[in-house]
Structures are given as structure tokens and as C-alpha cells.
Figure 1 (cartoon, rainbow, N blue to C red):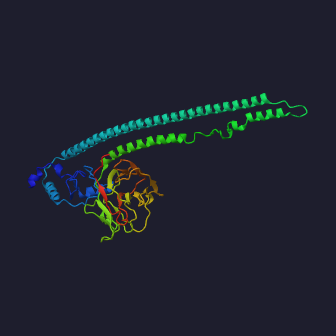
Figure 2: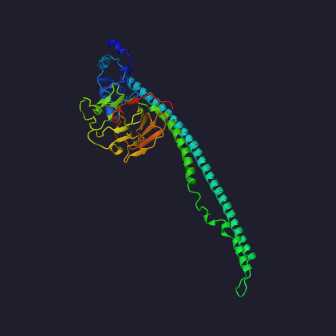
Length: 438
């Protein structure tokens, strides 16, 4: 067997970290093997939980147990490997390192090219959208000005017409008074005939026959609400565009979907976690579970087993017709015992549906949210590097709310199915990996 092993290429027995034959080799879930000390030192130094060779990320750091078979084979190879001249070994190692770095350069350049294309696509999209919105706003502004000017011309014509009517009545009154005014004798006496003529004149210009001008007014501030109504129309167009972009955004986010499962050891005793760790419901009795520091003991919450400290990840939760629930992400170090306030300052970035049907973002103070459609499935997107936690209505693709912050601790997905409310809210929260077509 020793002679057979010595015929195998040496690369099968080399740790890619130290470039030497395995010593106490360990094999991680992706299938790659390393020296126990090399891998432990690498993970400690980089504060990571991914494979140094293929870069696969593990939700939890794998347990490192020595691969006994590989250890025995490596020891046999070490004892029986073909002897090489001293100058041969460095050449092989250096050449391999050069090739790896050349491949890395190509991958980086390719990634940069893809990134540039993404930037250009986003710039073109934004130019198109903002140009259309600016054009729409300018058009609305011109329409407002045109409407105001037209209204002004109408009012000017109205006033001109009223002034003419008034001037005409004034002329008639003056004319009638001048033509029919009687002569009054010097001694002040009037004959009976003269008195009768005067009475007739007065009756011909009676106020009852004139227009009642006391009720004729001109509104001095006719444009109340004109600009606001026009701007409201523009806001509706912007809102429609935002919803369209949100749908497109959600489609792009789906590629960051991660598989998460609930951590039963964190679940409050009133919660029941399904065997597949994908569902959680509130029960009417305490479960017999061991106490531990990670378990919530006052509020019926549960965390996912997975935690994240970099990159982007997305998951969906089916809430159905439940009347109360809480979803989001929390710091790994949050208080899980006793009373605490749910807010970003305490490590909670969560969205809630209250029993009264009100949706809120648990900021401080809380932020009420007006949703056009009640979501039956909620998408949660965490961009750790950019410091954002966003929520979406999966059915409509509408963006619900985004928290922005500076994350420094590992973050766990967070779930609370809400109180039972006499059995009306007994349905579970369900972690889903299938998508609704938008």
C-alpha cells in the first residue's frame, strides 16, 4: 500500500495553507482538507467561517475533527514519498502560487467589469427615470401657470363686465334725475301738479328696480390649493414609479436568498417550533424545555440558528392572515431575559403588525406605516455592509420600510408569532424559500 500511495501526486497530500503534507488533517463540509492548526489559525486571524480554498460560507463554524484516514495516508506518504532535488519543490510551489494569483486577477477583473456594467445600467436607469419625472413636473407646472392665467383672464373679464353695468346704471340714474328735475318757485311754494310730477320721477328710479350690488363680490384669493393639487398629482406619478422600481429591486434581491432555520434553544417556552425548524406558533401552555442563557424568558420570541456579519442575505416569512406578528433582525448580544424595549438602540430592527391592524416599524419612537395591501408574505433583506434592513410585501413587490444603521455585532433573523387572542392568531409563522411571481 505504501508503494501505491507514493505513486499518487503530492498535491493530494498538501495543505493549501502551509503548502506542506497534512499534519492532523481536518475535512470541512465543502470537502476540502487542511491541517488542524493551519485552519484554526486562519479562522482566528480572519474572524471568518468560510473555506479558504473555495470560499464557501458556513452559517455556523464547523466542528473540527481529525480525519483519521487522511491522517494515516498522509503519514504513510510522508514516509514513502519520492525524493526530490531541493530545487524542484520550490518551483512547483511557486508555479502553483503564481497560477492561483493569475486566476484571482482574472476573477477580480471580471468582477470589476460586471460591476462597471451594473453602475452604468443604474446610471442610465436613473437618468431615464429622473428625466421623465422632471419633464412631468415641468409639464404640471406649465399647466398650473396656464390654469392660473386663464382664471385671471376670466376674473378680469368678469370685473370689466360688472364695472360696465355699474357705470351704465350710474349714467341712467344721472340722466333721469337731470331730465325730470322740476323747477321750484322762488317763494318755495309748489302747485299740486308740480308735486305730482316729482312723485312720478321718484317712482321711476326706485331702488327696487336696480341691481342689489351689496351681494356682488370678487374673491381676492382664488388660487387656494391649486399648486398643492398639482403637486399631489406629481406625487402619485412618483409613487407609481417607486412601486415599479421596488418590484424590480425585489427580483434582484432574490438571488441573495439564504436557507435559515429556527433555533429551538432560543424559543420562549410558550412557543412551539416544528421538527423541520421552519415554523413557529404560540401555544396555550408552557413547553417543557431546559433553561439556558440564549432562551427568551419573558416575551414569546425565537431567533434563527444562522447569524450574519457581512454581505447580503434575504429570506421570506409567510404571515398569512395573522392579526399580530413581529419580524426582523437582532444583535446576537441582545438581552433575552426580563423586560426590554424593542428598538434599534437595544439591537432590534423589526417590523410589527399590532392586533388593531396597524403596521409599525419599531424605531424610537415607533413609525406608523400606511400599507396599501396587507402582506401575506414578508421579505426581509439584510445588507450588513451597507447597514440596511429592508422589508417588502412579496405579493405586490412594494417596499414597506428600511432601517439604516451601523452594524458591529453578528445579526440573527428574529421571529415572534404574536399572542393567541383566543385562538384567532394561532396560525404559525412559516419560513419560506419559494417565491411569489410579481
